[in-house]
Amino acid sequence: MHERERQRERERQRERERVGRAGLGQRETEEERGRERQRRQDANLGLDKRGQYQRQAGHELALSPIPGLTMKARAGLVSALVLFLLMGEVSTQRTRGKKPTKRPPTTKKPSVAKPGAPAQPEPKEPTEFPPVILGPPSAFPDCPRECTCYPSYPNALNCENRNIRVIPTIPFRTHYLYLQNNYITEVTEGAFVNATEVRWINLANNRIHQINKQVFEKIPALLYLYAQENRLKEIPSGLPASLEQLRLSKNRISKIPAGAFSKMGNLTLLDLYYNQLADSDLGANTFKDLKSLVQLNLARNILRKMPPALPSGLIQLFLDRNSIDDIPKDYFKDMYHLSFVRLNRNQLSDKGLPKGVFNISTLLDLQLSHNQINSIPMISSHLEHLHLNHNQIESINGTQICPVTLEDELADESLVPRLRYLRLDGNHLSPPIPMSVIMCFRHLRSIVL
Image 1 (cartoon, helix red, strand yellow):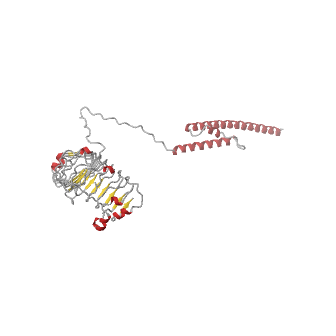
Image 2 (image 1 turned 60 degrees about the horizontal axis):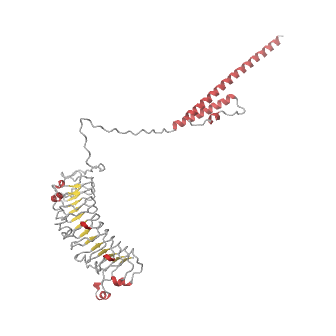
């Protein structure tokens, strides 16, 4: 009886424990399900904030049921996966470089002058000029800061390549003045007040548009004036009578004032290459006073005629790159020392070349390339170099162009023509060279065909 009572009590106790455990498990299951929903919402919210994963990642986290796993294990696996992804995202955000933010350009406010302060003057020189380069300290107290004075050359003043705009005061001891490769725009007499002994001035490659006449009154003993590559529009006035060389190439000269070369009987070299001189700028008396002139360079101008009345003592005449189409008869007859004539790149033809115009006994080098010549002109037996390349020559006959007859050559060896170099390429000729040419010009060393 009592045994049955105790057994029933034990069964009722086990039933109560079973019901308690079931209720506890159900509460735990509901709590786990609530936590799972919260984790999913947090994960989706985190992914949306970072914008790195698509919404499909949210339902990827909702793992499909895996056989053999309890609901609690599945929740733990999902939590671990979400935590792993969140940590990776945070790591990526830390390592990703921050994009530089561009600041808007700030515009400097224009300065407003105070009512009581005077207005600032405008700069007088172009701002593109670089600053002046000062020279090293000098042992000469009168040496300008912009220049260099070498103790070994006390008579030379070196002011080249210094970005100078204004010529400094020249010391009295200066004989050689170097001012090339600067930004000088005008030459005035103030810098030469004490420079009465200057013999040589180099002003090449500046921006000079004017040389005052009074400058040459201060330097009456000047021998060499180099002013090429500037902006001069006419020959400077008042050039000293002592001058021996005048170089004015690569300027803008289109005018030679009357009497510009008067009293310049010592001038030996006049270089006017690459200017804008026309026939009207060269009068009959332009060069008449240049009794000592040896070299005249008028190449690369706009001449259509030969310059008139050249000095009789001229040795070198350069007229390349003009538009000359005619040479007057006996043009060279009074030039007793003429040795070099260059007329390359003009418009010369047979019509504009009188017969025997180049038959000058003193002529050694004749250049007529890049013209419209059809036949070889008559030459002197003393000519040594003849340039006829790039013309319209179609044939060559040694008998016709030979300055002397074969009989005269055989009778007197001194009469054999002295031609050594003959250039005929760029014409309508083809080898071989006729034997008559070889027989006439027996001193010929080179023929370019």
